[in-house]
Length: 294
Image: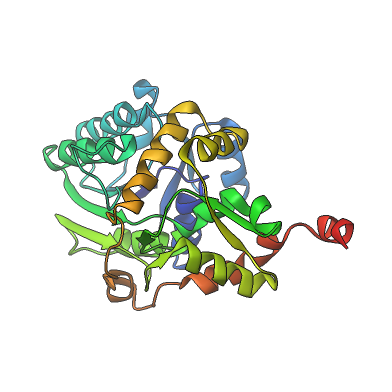
């Protein structure tokens, strides 16, 4: 049996959908009873569990052979994921497929990159078989700025730095594939999209699909930080994102495409234009907003 943590999130939810399509038995983990009830109403095996409450994990892990491990970037991420790894070891889980990050580095100034590196080390030393997925920055991050993009602006602090953006749907497809197969023990896979793009090129692609000009605004760090705060990000997250995009400016995310996604799944990854096309309605604004603008 496969346990999917983060089953209500974008990547975890897509993994559940893909496993369901192939008839692969899995168990979805939710932190709230309403989430568990919603899964069960659809005929999905689901269990209540919380990495912040280690006492809930033995029951969650019962009968589990393989686990997909993912948590959102927060100040609790290290504690949460190491608790999950330790509980999995005690429960006899054979293998963990972990979502890490391409920039994971113990000396990184980006908080979640440093945390991922520490968790990766903990997993490798746990005695459990492991597979680590290291995606680059997600295309879905552009949805944070969908309202500004709908008005014709892409606000960022990335300078001329390029990124090998990857679609989370492709990351989920790799995870679902690896979870179903043997032969990936002690493997680390760097997952990228098929091309690298800087923000100017991304703005041009957004504009081409939206049917209007979208201009890249390379903002000063304080203004970008204020924008992140206004859009609901915590101070911790805001500071981390500003530091991470400084890495983009320095060229640390300009990774040549690895083609691992197609090699592992047999399907090429989405390019940025396909991603924008699939989310066009969000980038051009709601129909009511377009009517007001007209």
